[in-house]
Length: 128
Image (tube, rainbow, N blue to C red; front, top):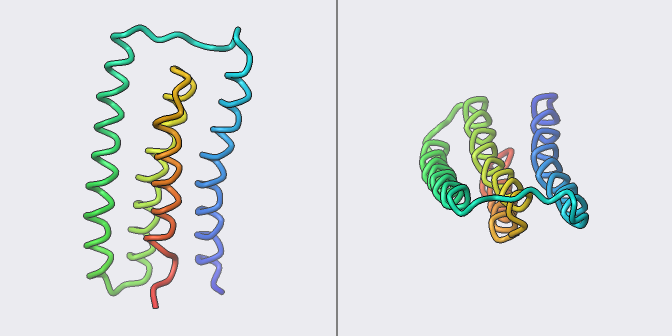
């Protein structure tokens, strides 16, 4: 196994564990009533539109990268595109964590975590 593959495996683990640990910290922080930030209805609407834009960007970007990776012959370039796809998915998971922290709603975090896990499966390190 080459050092770049090992480094990329470490990146994958760090991305997933970072989002999971962020969720765990939020969960434990939200258990204390004095640590709960409040959001106004205007802020909640803004967060909703930002979340839609992030999800749209991640889905569209993943679809484009899926297409590009399928046509790329260079292994190093393919690896770079895979890391980019994972980063798009991590963005969705982290934003879900921000929503969970600010509003107490986990409805954005759980799908974001699933999207990240599916991205790690859909964009593997090495294709046969």
